[in-house]
Length: 171
Length: 156
Image (cartoon, rainbow over all chains, first blue to last red; front, side, top):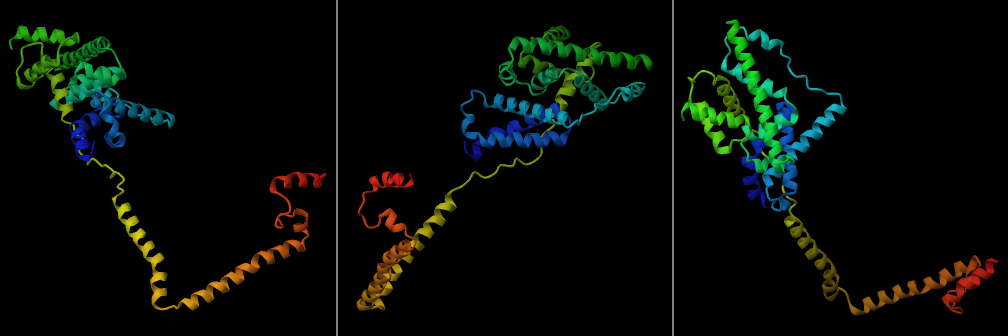
């Protein structure tokens, strides 16, 4: 794989890598660094990439592992990302919600899900990957992915409904 | 898509049973319909969120270190080889033009004289310490394989 071939492989993939990294690491800067590092790692092993039956799934796996390592490092250094708590949200619920707020709420809801469910939502509902690809990337069985996704989607829906009912009730 | 179809797809979606194609249909429906029938509002928010997230892009340049190129190394080593060859050949070509054969012979003889004294001098200096007589290596009276046995005896 020469530079040109590598670029045409990585260009459609880099955004997905970045978004997945952001899902794990939350901060944009950290996600950008992770993306660059994953691309470098892939570049170093470019000659071996063709051997994988899905280099794309391999890239996703590599991103996942890289991010998990980063999170471990953070934990070791006692650097914790403090997620926004919900106090601010309750206050804004008294008002008519702006479209952006609505999206921010979904984002917050997803952040409360177990990590694996978050990643599955990311890969399926945002990146729109086939189950086969997700199974390879996450080293999970397709049925297990479907079950976890179903659980996650139902939870998200219930949470959104809660906000909306609460919002309309106070109007 | 009518309401019934959507309800069926949504049910499948929640159960994790929709195909990518079906999910795309749902997504398109909720992104293009601003006014929705009662009870579908939460899906509009959800699919808008998914679509919005997908717009997030990695905008930094992709930095790839250049693969180590050995081209310049080949050029440099080629030049170096030529220089070495020229340096080696130079004395010969100069000798033909400037020096005479007699002078070269004289110089070589002088050099052999100097070198010829060297073994004797080193023998003498060894003799001075009395080492040469003990070992008797230089004189060739003993074969090397007997040497170690003899020196072992001497140590006793």
